[in-house]
Length: 386
Image (cartoon, rainbow, N blue to C red):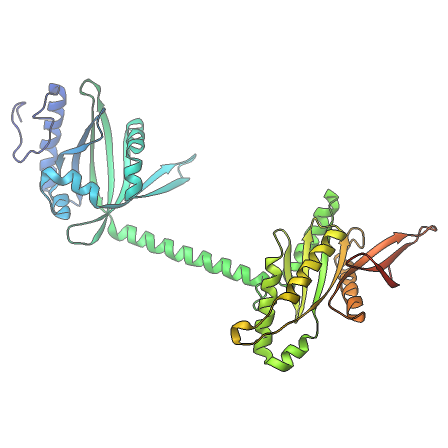
């Protein structure tokens, strides 16, 4: 091909523009080679793209016939049509090691916002590797893998991208399917993991989580010198709710009571469905008085709430709550639970619908005496054993 002959059907700018002869010769030879390659009708779609340093418009010096058929446009409009039909662009970049490949997915609007940034990255690396999802002229979606090398012509302030597009729709659809399956499996795994530590009825944590977590909390609190408290809670006369409204409505009432508990606890505090109408509250960082205050707040909220309204019933319940604190009252899981349970039963014995805890004092002879105290810290008659 002579320097002055323009290929038939040429719609580019360089061969007809005011550019250096070396650039024109390079483009002319590449077009000649790509025309021959394109006539072989291989799966690869060759192209030559160009853009100026000071402008943001990319055009094709050459593009294979197969892309024109996909886009349903003229050669002169191929660049605009291709850009407008892109739905997603997937970029694959290495982090530290070759096996650490990161995939970045950009939607069409993000491509517009980041086009200057992306172009700068390509200029620095000299290599373009991406996968595009496009909507073609026939309305179908296709995936095109783009691989190219970028060469600067500084004298002309031009960058040339020489590469090819390959249709990889089947491979990318298989990859997307695999991702959906993996996501579903991960979601299922997380679901069963949550079910393993949560109560099915109330959504609160279950006793399995309680025992495991409390052992860890005791170790952590002992090493850091921090306190925490437990609250043992029982719904008063709940059997009457069961007998009056049936088991299904009673279960619904427990769900609603659990929701009241959740609303009044902030992480890291949490509630546990201990069994039947019994609950345990775990309050990290709460000393005795703070725990009594929170227990009293929950008791009042439960008493003021009307349950089972959604099924046309208006049910009022009350609760009895007992508090124990680590390390003041006990230093083992079983002792803490037993003391909180004992404090709760002391409420039951004295009329229910109240909060109390264990409070220890040291006598003159050095003995520790555990006293049952009410929410307002008034000591009841009688003592709790050590």
